Image (tube, rainbow over all chains, first blue to last red; front, top):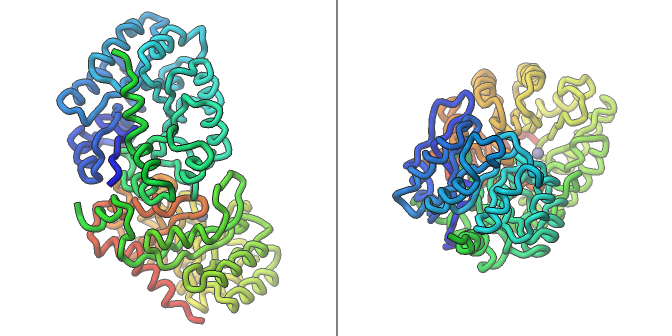
Length: 249
Length: 260
Ligand SMILES: [Zn+2]
């Protein structure tokens, strides 16, 4: 069976009109149900996670007692001195075993421009802490520009849609530091097969979309795909494990 | 882990009967990597799906007839595995009547209507299609996206043509409560849960509200991946019997009630 390390998972958040909060235990239960070994987790849904400092503490606390949950805290440039220095944010993340930093440009009101992000991105680059970015928070062209500025840093693009195959192929070919989460919504017929054939499996990551999505969808898409076993293993867990191994402490 | 989930997790054939009631062939505006019918049949074989009922992407516009011809070729190439929905562009009442009669005779099993053309489902030119479909107890797959107008139009059609099996595509992609209420009100309405995402709990919600007997499964292949779309049923928290109704029995009944 293909081992799975889920890049697109989370818990403890809520959204407008939703009373139920997915607890960490639910997340672990779902992982057990589908035999997902580990997950990179955020507080999700994150629409109402507006106090980043508190949100990250909540995340670290929830990930503290298991190595199956790898935190992906939110980070922002401290240009307005409201949030703790970039050094502190990154150090705290590393101390808590973070596997990536979640950058929410639109939600947190900042831009991927050198005059805004240089200090934070330089630090991520130095520590090789991957940047996790959702498609809803940054248009693809801006995402590509950012990745071009830091060719040695890994950028993970999550919530990729099924309509963008025409862009994803040149994106992944031209930017070897970009990784695509094949989570919920990336589901075009023959898509994974074409990406593996034209680009290779190294830049693809399995993502379940938990807790808002049924994880078996992303799992079945991967395990039934017409690609070789080794590629499935890389996408399932290998590539993300390799990214996390590269993080410097 | 139950047996079905285990097979799915390992990528083995699921060993249960399945009919995909919502497929397409043909090119579209965004890139679809694999545009051959064989790739659908390969996917069906891998998963263990008996049939996929397809319309053409041209169901959305004036090239519908070319689409029907392509679907006909697919049916011929894979008899019993690929079935066809007739696509209609309502140029005139006469045109619609000729098209429906022609393709029914050729073996198509239902009609697919899409409102991307900006025309209401109650357009008078479509009347012959509804009349014939009603006489033959056909399924009609309506593209829907939770729009008020869509519900109003389909309500009118459902009330006027009670022998139709009305399939609401993309049920629960938004406004799940409205879809459930609509199905409760109209006994000839079936909820098709095709949707790119796989919202957790949606199938459980519909089953609780309307029962599993009027939920049907479709993949939206070539747009979407059949295995990914199956995952939402395989993984959901329903009994094996309920899953079988959704994946097969309900669709089988819809096909069996057609009068040729
Ligand atoms: Zn469709």
